[in-house]
Structure formats: structure tokens, C-alpha cells
Amino acid sequence: MAQAPKNVESVKKPKPNYLILGGGIIGFAVAKDLRKNDKEITIIDLDKTRVETLRQEGFNALLYDISDPELVNVIDFKNLICIAALSSNDNANTKAISNFKPLIPENVRVVARASDGLKREEMIAAGANYVFIPPKIVSGTITEYLDMMETKHTGNRLASWLDDHRGMKLGIVLHDNPDPDAISSGFALMEITKKYDINAEILYDGKIGHHENKAFINLLDIQMVKITGPESFDKYDKLAMIDCSVPGVNNSVPAGKNIGIIIDHHPHGETEPNAEFSDIRTNVGSSATILTKYLQQMDITVSKELAAALLYGIRTDTNDFRRNTTSADFAAASFLHPLSDHDLLTQVETPSMSVETLDVLGEAIRNREVVSTCLLSNVGTIRNRDALPQAADYLLTMEGISTTVIFGIMEDSIYVSARNDDIRVHLGDVMRQAFGENAGGHPTAAGAKIPLGVFSSAKDKHTLQKLVEESVVKRFLTAMGLENEDDDE
Image (cartoon, one colour):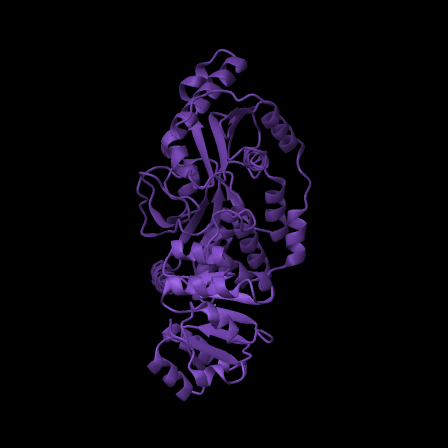
């Protein structure tokens, strides 16, 4: 091991605020930035030429092997804030961390550089508080830039499409029984179209059942038109599908309709969406995030009501940033937060739970069937499908449960809502495998709408419920690769 020269050992020990182990490209760059803050910096490196260069740059640089156990005796820890092991040698960084960690004060942080995930774990085990991997940082920065370029390119295409269709009448179609993400996204697109002299209306089918969703629409005064049949679409020159992408799949758009715009964040399954302009980003947590980016790019003034709507849409679809959340969702929320009417948001978030939702939750608890870590429950006939995801979210908190599947019958369909926190399972893929194209979603949240079909011929309600339950449970467990065996409760 290289030892400190006698002239170094004989001088007074340095008392750095920052001790940088490794004076290469990264170490030198970090030292230059830290020097702007008037902090005392000491750099340790084994390369004699590099040390001389650092000294010429005005740094206190010492010639030493950073992995040498004796190095701890060369430094005075009194003023130390942080040790940064930044050499390109993983083993040397790990040894240095092991040597220093037991001796430095508890409040001194240790930062380290690693070449891969395995070495990162070794450095954390040795005592590092934070370990970064340069290739990941570089690739992340490049990917972020490419995403920004793609967003700009897509936004320009949307602007061009809207500009080419000035004066037309546009129907903005949301998925059936729309949630805040779909509603706020439709609201945003309607505001965007005003810049291009387009007359747009928001269309929906099904019910606005959830109490919070009703409050959301009423308080924000969002105007929406109820679809009454296929003829509802005839008065529009073009249709835009928001938070859905395939006609007839969780929406009332007839097959073969002329679709001008599709904006969605859900996987579309095997059927390829067909529209003049399409933007489907499965790498973001909400459609509201996508629409927020358009508003920013097109420099459209965002009212406090629209900001509140989009922020609420992002929060609900990401379960308050705990589900399928990306940096894009955080960035959009950060932009919207200071613009939002927070008093209004508080009013939206505080309506009481409906009696029906409580009833569905009670049925879900009573009828639960547990297989391995999956909980499945048939809640019978329902009037409000929004109660299903609430029950699925609630039951996911039960000990030992990683996947919940709650289902019920409404009118002529079976509705299924599922939640998952097992990172090994992509719930959307499982649901699609189990129930076909009318199902899908994200790794942690998915749903399905299954036509009753042959089940509707059942002679009585009890028989119908039994047939539906057997079919849904069997299909889901088969897709999960599980046998239908009840756990002891």
C-alpha cells in the first residue's frame, strides 16, 4: 500500500468539512462545486500526477491509498460533514467505508459511488448512507431528455391536428362511470380546444356514483352530457376518447366511429387503437398528467378550478402517489399545486361515505374467500360500481393479503375491481388473461366488465350469483396459477 510521504505525515492533520476519496473526473467535479460554498475540502488519491494537478488547482490533496486502514489516522474528524468515496474502484470504496464508518461521528454522512447494484448493496452494508451508480444517472438523464422531446413532439402533433380542425364540433368521450382522472382530463382537453375555436362537449355513459365524484363535478361546475344511445354521437364531427382507447371497451362508442383523438394511460390489450391522433402513455400514473403537460407546452392559462380538477385526478388515480406513480406525475402535481383552489379540494375530499358503499364493503368482508394471498369476494347485485374499488382498496390492507378481487352484478354485466401490492404480479395482464379484452389495467390496479351472456338465463337470483362467482373465481385463480383452496380463517 502507498503510504503518506513523510512531509505529509509530519504536517498538521487536515480538518475538512468534506473528505473526498478519489480525485478522478467525478471527485474533481464534486470538489469544484463544493468549493463554491467556501467549505474546507481534502481529496485523497493514489495517483501522484493527479494529486499534483489537484494541488495546482488549489485543493488540499494527499497521496494515499483510500483503502489503507491507516488513512483514518491522517484526518481530523472534528469538522467533518461528509465522506464521499468517489473512486472508480468498487472494492477500494467499500474498504474505505468500512475503515471510516466505526470511527466517525454518527451525524457524518457517507456517500459512495458504485458500478452496479450488487456493489451498491455491499457499500450500504459497509455503512454508506447513499450510493449512486453513474451509468444509471447518465441513462436516467438521457431518458428524461428523450421523454421531454417526445412530449414536445406529441404536443406539436396535437396542436397541429386541432389547428386543422378549427370550427368543428368535438365530442370528448370518457369511459363509462367516469372517475376524477377521466373527468378532469376531459375538462382540460375542452379548455385546450377553445384556443382553436373548436366547440367541444364532454360525454359520458353509466353513472356518476361515488359521492366524491359527484361533489367533484358539482363544485367545479363541469358540464357533461349523458349519452342516451348511438344517436348521441351523430351531432359531432369527430370524437375524442379520453382515459380509454378502444371503442366499446368500457365506453359506449360504436365500433367503426371516426375517432379523431385518443389520450389514455391504460394498456390497450390486443386491439390496436385507431385514431387520427393517438397518445397512449402507460408509463405515467394518470391521463391528467398527460393533459397537464399539454397545457404547459401550449402555454394555456390554467384556472384554479382546472388546476384543482387535474391535481385531484392525478391524486386519485395514483392513490395519493402510492400507486403507479412516476416522476412525470410528481412534476405535473408540482406545477398544479400552487395554481389550485385548495378550499375547493377540501370540500371535494370530505363528503361522507354512502350507505350503499358501506353495504358493499360489508358484503365484501362477509363473503370473502382467501386462496394463498388472494382475497376474492362476490358482493352480489350493486347499484354503484364505484363501491367495488373502494372495497378492493380497503381489503388490501388485511394482514397476509397481497391481491384483492371484488365483483358484483349491475344490469347486464359483471363488474370486477382488483388491487395488488405484490411486485411479482402484473395485475392488468392477469385480468386480461382471465377475462379477455374487456379487462386490463396496471400492475397494481385493474378492472373488468364482463357481459352476463349465458348466465342471464339463470332461473333465479341465487343461481345466477352462484354461477357468476364460480366462473369469476375459477378464471382469476387459473390466470394466477393458483388452486381454489380455501384457507383456514
